[in-house]
Amino acid sequence: MKRKKKGIYQTRKLSWKRIAILVIAFAALAAAVVILVVTFSPEAKKVLTGLGKISTARLHDEDTQYSYYDENGTALLTPYEDNGLGTGTMAEVIVPYAECTDGSESSNLSNPLCSSLTRGTVDRVASVLGDADNPIYVLESGVKVNDEYLKITENAYLLPENTLTVSTCEESNNGVKFTLDTLWAVPVQMITEPQEYYTGYLERIYNVAEYTAEYLDIRFAHTASLEGTLDFSASDVIRSYEWLETESGGTLRLYFKQTGTFYGSSYSLDGNGRFSFVIKQNITQDDAPVVMLDPGHGGSDPGAASLTDTYESEVTLNIAEKVAENLAERGVRVVMTRRDEVDVSIDERLAMNRKYAPALFVSIHCDSSDNTELFGTHTFYYKNFSQPLAQSIHENMAAVYQGLYAADEAKAAESDREIKFYPFAVTRVEDCPSVLVECGYLSNEEDCDFLMSEAGRLQIAAAIADGIAQQLNIA
Ligand SMILES: [Zn+2]
Image (tube, rainbow, N blue to C red; front, side, top):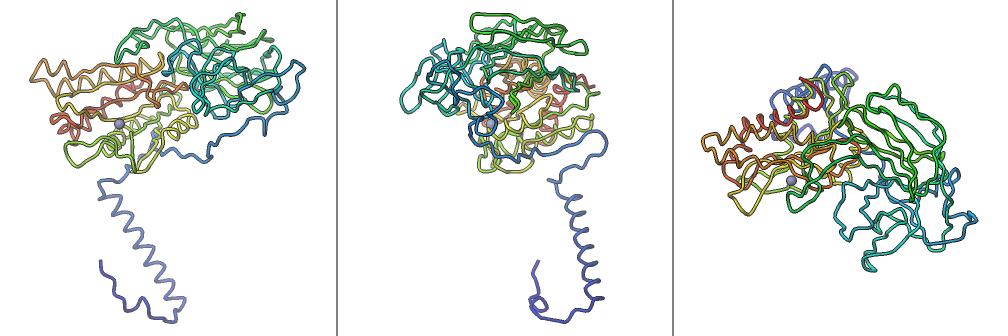
C-alpha cells in the first residue's frame, strides 16, 4: 500500500474530539488487522480453548559457569576451607549438569549407564587423561568429566567421609520428591537395573529390546551412612527401598512398584546443604500432563535441504505444530521449544526441558542422505526408560510409511528403519523419557513428496501424537 505523503507531515491543531475519533479509528483498524491475520494467515497459530494449551518455552536466566560456593558455601563443607585432612587436587562442577562417562573405560562416547553431576559437586582428581589443551579428569568416584565442566584447584582441602540424613519425603503430582541433608556435595550417580543391552546401529552397545528395570540405584560416593527413614507408603512409583554399603560409598536402592515404571529423575543441591531428588511417575491424563515438543533446527540453522526449496526446519516446525494441536485437543498441555524460525541452541533446548519438567520430550527431525535411495522412518532413544516411548511412536510412524509404500511389499518392509540407541544431545535427557523421531528422508523423492504434502504431514503428526498419547494412557 502506498502512503499519501500529504497530511502526514502537515501540522494541525488537534481537538480532543478529533483525537478521540482518531484513537477509535486506529483501535478499530488494529482489531480488523488482527482478525484478518488470525483468520486468513495459513501460519496463524490455532487458538485452543478447553484443557489443552500450546505455549512456547521461555528461558530467563543465562546459565553461565560459576562456582557453587561463591554464593552457597556456608552450609556445606568445601574444598576451599581447611577440613583438617590435608590437601589434594580437587574438582568442582561449575555447570548445571556435567555429563560423565565411565572412568574405567578408554572410550569417551556418551554412556547411558552414567548420569550427570549437578553443579557444586566436588571430588578428588584421581588422574588426568587427554592432552594439555583438552584434559579429561578421572575422579575418585569413578567417572570421567571434561575440563570445560570443572574448576580444578590444586592444594585444595580434602573432605571427610560423608553422612546423609533424611529431611523430607512427599508425593507430588509428577512423582516422589525427597530431600537428604549432606555434609558435602558428594558425586551422585543414578542407574536403573536390571537391564540387558545388545549391540545395534553403528555398533553401539546400549540398545534395549525390552525395558525391564526393577529398581533405581542412587549411588553416593564417599558416603558411609543414611540416617532416618524415607516413607514411600503413598507413592505410586516406589514400593520400598534399602541402603547398601559398598567399598566406594553407599547406594540408595529404590524398588519400583511395577517393572518398568520409572519415568526419569532429577536432583539438585540447595544452599542449605541439601540434596533434592524427584523420581518421576507415569503421568496420565488426570495429572494434566505436559509434553515438550522440539521442532529440530530453526533460524540460522535450516537443517537438511530437501529436493524442493523447503528446508528441514520448516517441515519439522509444521509437523510439530500439527502434533501440538492434536495433543492439545486431547487435553495435553504442550510446550514447544520454538514456534517460529528462530535460533534455539541445543543447550537452550535442554535447559527448557529441565525448566518445564515435562512428562515426555519429543524432538522432531527429517533425515537426509547422499544416498537418495534411502527412505523411511526411525526413532532414537538413549536411556533405557525412553525405549517404550520410542517404540510406541515408532510403531505408529512405521504404519504410516507401510501405508505409503503398500504397493511394494519389500519397500513397505524397508521403510521401517526401526528404533535405535543413539546419543543425540536431545535424547541424552535424564529427567524424563526423551526420543528423536526422524520423519522420513528429504533427500528421497517419494519420502520428500509425502513430507511436502499437507496430507502426509497430518498423517505423520497423528502418528507421533498417537504414540505419545499411548504412553500417557490417553485415548
Ligand atoms: Zn535434523
